[in-house]
Image (tube, rainbow, N blue to C red; front, side):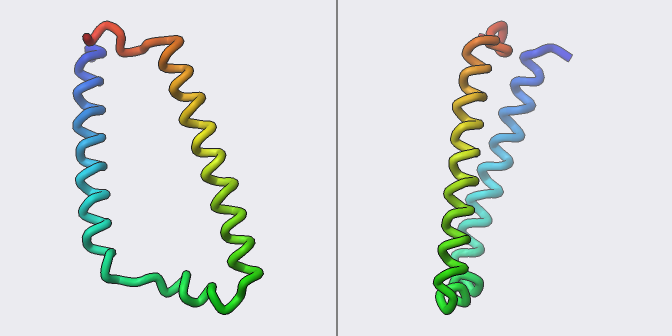
Length: 81
């Protein structure tokens, strides 16, 4: 399989993911947030949840920076354009 064919496949997969995400956001907008509503009754649990969300967000952002660095160094799709 040619590297440019893989590049097109990834573009299709990314497009499918984006469309699915938009659909999900539109459909679930009216469902509400029962977990978040229940969590308001217990402020100590909300603090734990918020700290965990911050930790996971930081790990994700570090992964993005690492991935960008790897892509800039190795340039795996350099032959396609």
